[in-house]
Image (cartoon, rainbow, N blue to C red):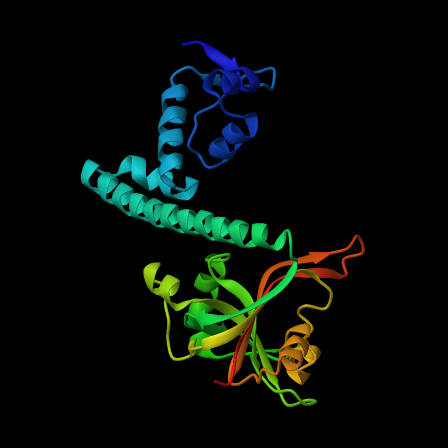
Length: 271
């Protein structure tokens, strides 16, 4: 049977030499060691490689492949059922990411003419998963049950600062966490428990910004010095309840310092 050097064998199968080495180290490929010290790959190993490529595309790991190949057909199909379900869930998540970006793009296009803008409108409820109090991480068991999943759903979920709003020095309390519209959380089946808070805004002042310096400064948000609060004061509006400062994008300069923020501040107002 004809045998091939690693580079030639890899090229003929559309894989890399590192791919072959990885599967060889896992004991999934038979290699012939010649007297000259070179390793050669017999032609019949190509069938194995093609099978491994098929399984890899299902999401079967190298560690799982050995058991898969030595099992029976029923066990194999069951494993592939599970892998296909995981792929379907991932496709659903990726489609949600694409939809979230399209919403961001539509929002951003409106900011081209007016990078800083505001409006008063009825605002849908959001749900909020707090992971910090000021600059101290929370360590709730319920938080850890959800944190990884909510993080995986960024940018459908948003990094956000919840602010118990106040207009005088040091009256506000701030919490960093993840936020998402309640309707989207339900649509995508995001897990919730007792740690998750529902923020019902009703009529709210919404402050949009692109390139806003100090947009996510916690001290300014807590003390009512954020530009959104200053604008509300100028308009004669009174904030109430809990506001949500949503971070769509946080940029930095060449030295890694925070540059202009991109996002919006949703602040419920006194009717």
